Image 1: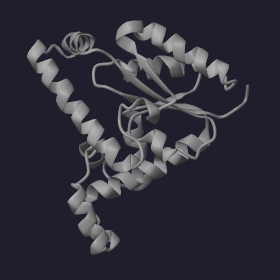
Image 2 (image 1 turned 90 degrees about the horizontal axis):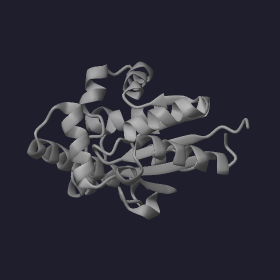
Image 3 (image 1 turned 180 degrees about the vertical axis):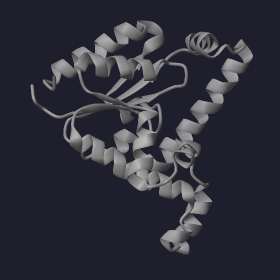
Image 4 (image 1 turned 120 degrees about the vertical axis):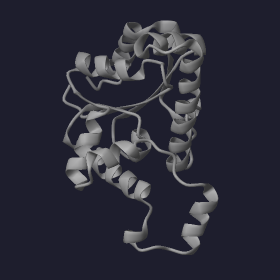
Length: 204
């Protein structure tokens, strides 16, 4: 098949979403973007890569702050830097989606590309014990520290997603085409499951 498609993967921390997305891209023979996206955003926008990394998936200001900004519009030079970074992210994500089929990890790609034909949105989750075990092994953390990092990171991701996605909520099944429990299936079976889904959609 020659259809162009994008797989946007949202994921809980420690669920293996990055690895699943990378292996799926390899299996499908398409491009993969996670941290690689940050360098491209920097290149496209002219902003420093360190600045892009600092604001990567960072929650925006509060809802009250947003209301205040609506009431008192600012010039672009006064727009908060995290908003500028997000706008640069939007432009780069749309650009790479237009270039060809790919897998994009996180960064509200499913919302940014909601009007894109052949978009597949995926949420990867797992039980806490599975996530802790993965983070402990990968990052060399204690169980308590791993749990703390998981909770804090997922709270940050949810805040970021919920702020920019408006009518969707991070982790809620109706926000995605597929929600997959990697704790039950494992990494490779999760990849195969998603691969077969793409095939059933007649996209690959």
